[in-house]
Length: 121
Image (tube, rainbow, N blue to C red; front, side):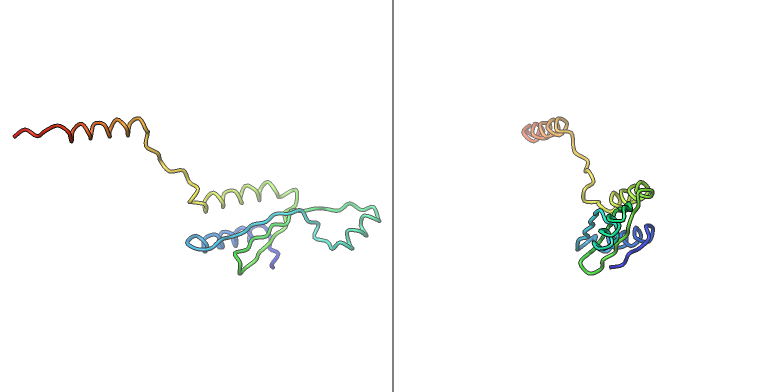
């Protein structure tokens, strides 16, 4: 697992999503982390120090795993960029144009009435 800065992480995530467009999946997980071991956290608690928690974000496509850590100061910028990437890459979730039911029902009735009229010779 590679711990990247925010911008390279977003670039790699975009590349992962592009590769998995036709076939495959990408899993993204987010969790709270201090990036310290349990022993270090216990020592900090006993000493009365405050623990700085960050958001650990991991992305994997089954073969490659990338990760980054986002602090409280950067979370809004990261969240906006992450949302933009997801909206651009999730094409299957886009709304399709629907035909108006009343208009399509009226058109069907007109087609049926035209078919039933006998032709003049």
